[in-house]
Length: 80
Image (cartoon, rainbow, N blue to C red; front, top):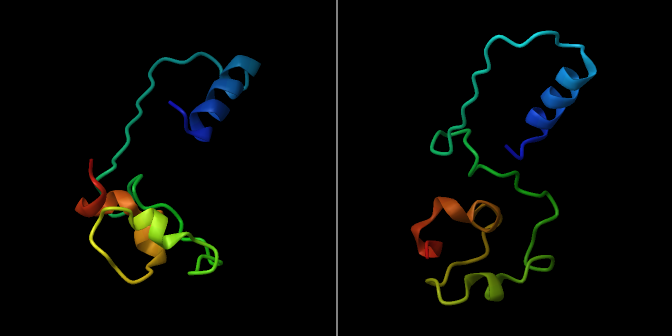
């Protein structure tokens, strides 16, 4: 997995801090309200800092929306 948490866990294991591992359980949930598609919306995002027209491309036109930009996977407009 590419998460920094898994990288840190591997480093702790390799260093001997964790000890013998008997069981590992891991999961991810991209569909929950706090899932992977809920990326942070940068506070400095604006019409001046985002190339909105390029982002929209062939998708239906919308007024600038920072959440739509950073969390585009939540919208069917951008599914390929």
